Amino acid sequence: MNFARVFLIGGLVAALPARAVYAPLPDTAGEEPWSVTLRAGVMHDSNIFGAQDGAISSIVYQASPRVAFNGSLTDQTYAAFSYTLAIDHFQDRPGDDKTLDSHDLFARLAHAFTPSTNIDVSNLYQISKNPESLLTGVPVNSNQSYKRNEFDARFLTAPAPKIGTTLKFRSVNFNYDDASLGEQLDRTENLYGVSGSYALLPELGLVGEYRRGDISYREGGSTKDKESDFLIGGFDYAVARKLAIAGRLGYEWRTRSSEESTGGPYAEFSGKYDYARRSFFTGGYVHTYEESSDVERYNDIRVNRFFFNVQHAVSALIVASGSITYEPSQLQGRRGVPDADETTTRLGVAITWLPMPRWSFSVSFDHDNIDSEDPQRGQKRDRFGVSGGYTF
Image 1 (cartoon, one colour):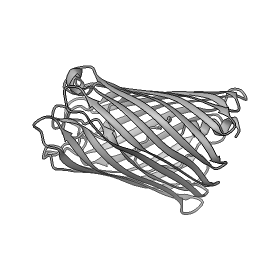
Image 2 (cartoon, helix red, strand yellow):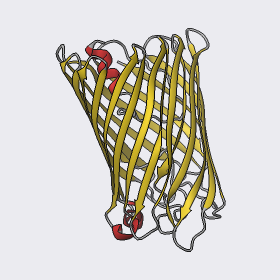
Image 3 (spheres, rainbow, N blue to C red):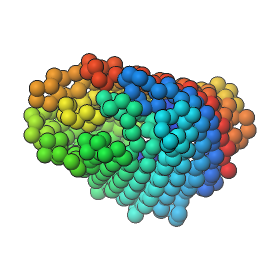
Image 4 (cartoon, helix red, strand yellow):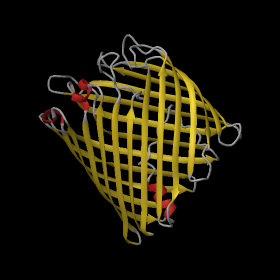
């Protein structure tokens, strides 16, 4: 396996690019390491604050320049960098602040010491003034803008021909601009892991893993902090050149500060099939615990998440894409608060026209629906837009 392929596989999850719509849009960047993309558009948002009642809709004018680097520094070192500025102007947003600027800054560096030993480090910093997915159960028409930093590091080595080991670390930091939201939700989530793999076949690897996670809130941590231990086993299977699947199954022991501890199965399965040029399917399933946006009443959420993405080249000039996430989950109530079932559906579709190299024009539609037993957490939101972009 060459160095470039090692770095690509290691960074599939670490790099999460910012995007304006849920559906995956085709990449128009050329083969040059440096690229500059200018994109602009207009959309209608039916619920700009994600309110359950009294939703405010608005036309939103958007501009999003992006500069990126993606290439090798040496035969053994790979680097990636991108900066995206997103400017949203709301025609009908209450108050004086009708123009919001968001920023995404991503950097990644990977170095192969030998063909079997490498390190991969990345960092994503976001200033989001107009969040793509809005919080549920927060006060009506509130400011949900935030700053988020995610740092990822992986060290991989192979002590024997068929045996591999991985050390990994992830730290995610949340800071909300609104003082009351920050008091409830500002936190740091750390995840540590060590795994071993065995190549049963050249295309099939078996994996065993231990993970340790901790969640530390900056206010009221004595009642909201959590610690988790995971034991996980699974596989990575390159079924064919265009098809790969992976699965993990295990158990999580979760300790909650000042609340009853819990535990349950942990699962993650995913796959990707590149069936033609500019055409692919990705999909999977995740079962785990995640943090709630209402930490005063709920410890966390037991999440079941099914996800599916497709991009299909209808012709040489037209690409259709779609994405759906379906989450039938359960809010885990604090003492005296009953659990509540909640189903979240996020759907996105887009049609992109590529009239010539580096140009793209898209029509997109996004739909959010949250159906909850908790009467304060329902939400519906639709966004319809058109945009165009050019990559230098």
